[in-house]
Length: 278
Image (cartoon, rainbow, N blue to C red; front, side, top):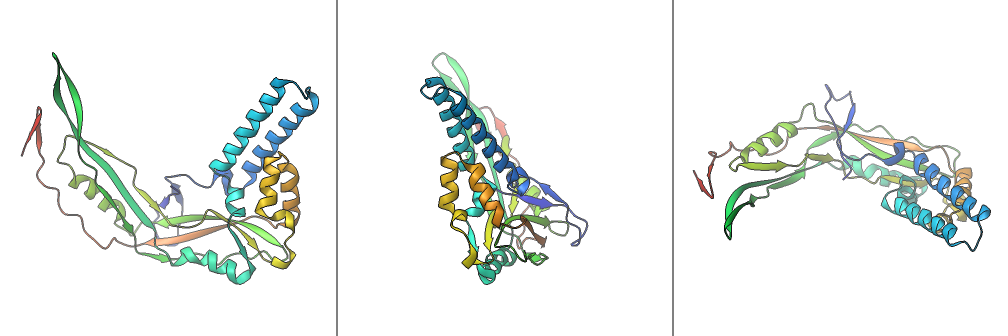
């Protein structure tokens, strides 16, 4: 999951601390472009200098092609944007403005368990017994402080990559998480997952400022065809000739207190071998 939080001293100060995966390759798309191009160049080198009918050469090229497609399929900022296109100023602003009216989402998970001794023939063994798997999620009230989108004047299209900075300095979301963990303290052991806090939003978008001027070689089908044929250095060069400078749009949210309370934890239970006593 894509997660970013901030521990700031005020609403005007946003220093993001990433607790999950951020946009790959620096969020600008250059990293996966260079990787794909390098793979294509090396593969074509093997094809041109190697013997066409040599099985080893064909096997190496096939493996490289498979690795490249897996890498792109697993997650590419460039193709995240290509698969999410918006046409015209009105549609672009509508899509970009959607997350501004949304609240961040939190998700908490953990597992409570203990071990019991069970007889297995003439021997005994420790068996893990899960007593509960608490889960809680919801939305955190917030105020939007996002700056207006920077418009690319004169470009036919632009890649837009989205990030989020969430200011929790005045919110009790972290304190309530600790109370929630303490509430389920009745078992001997517990595995607590890292709390997740994120703003629902697309990873990237291709903003087509002038739909009537969009060339055919910037469509998703043409670009994917270039990747499959290992000619990405050609298709992406053509794409770059008509696209403007990539834009990074940052959503800024100031978080408030959660609209609920966590009660005090119940009395702790003590393990007594294979049983439990209050």
